[in-house]
Amino acid sequence: MTSTSPRLLRPFLLAVALATGVATTGCGTSIAGLCDAYCDCEGCSDRDYEDCVDDLEDTEDEAYDAGCGDEYDTWLSCLDDEAECRGDDFELGDEDECGSEFLDLAQCAS
Picture (tube, rainbow, N blue to C red):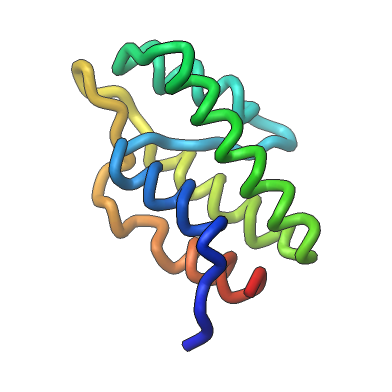
C-alpha cells in the first residue's frame, strides 16, 4: 500500500470527524455551497466555514495538480450523495461509505 499525502488526509479526516459532506465543483453543488449547507445544518463560526472551504479547495488543487481530477470528483460526488442534515447534524451516513473512493484519490496523488 502506498502512503497517502498528509495534505490530502487532513480534509478527509476533517470531513469524517465533523461528518461533513462535500459536492463536486463541476455540474453540481460548489464547495462553498456545500460548506453553506454544513453550516446551515450545524451552525458554525465564520472561521469554521472558511476552514471548510479552504481545506476542500486545497485538496482540489492538489488533486488536479497531481492529475487526479477524476478521482477527486468521484470522491466528492460520493460524499455529496451520502451527506444529509439530520436534526442539527450534517452526516455522511456510515463513515466508511466513501473510503474506497478516497483511497483511489490518495493512491493517485501519492
